[in-house]
Length: 60
Image 1 (spheres, one colour):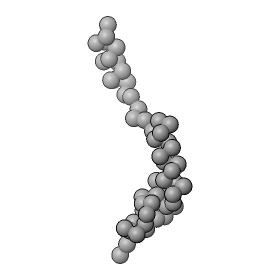
Image 2 (tube, rainbow, N blue to C red):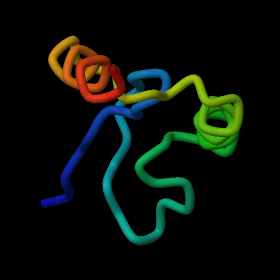
Image 3 (cartoon, helix red, strand yellow):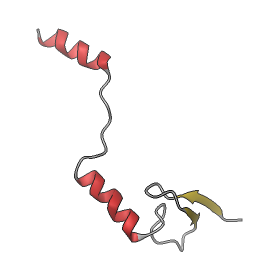
Image 4 (cartoon, one colour):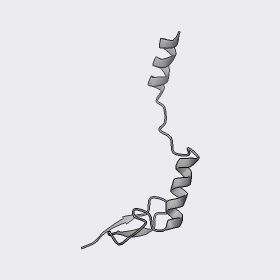
């Protein structure tokens, strides 16, 4: 039985298989869109307020 997942970019159902060239994406287009978001730094880990507050205290 083959596993199915959703494309992380568009949500389309994709069969998880070695023959699928673009996995976990459904197509080259979705793969390139994801790469573009990384390149433009659209994906970021948000800062927590606790870290920001402790950094302010240590620099004063």
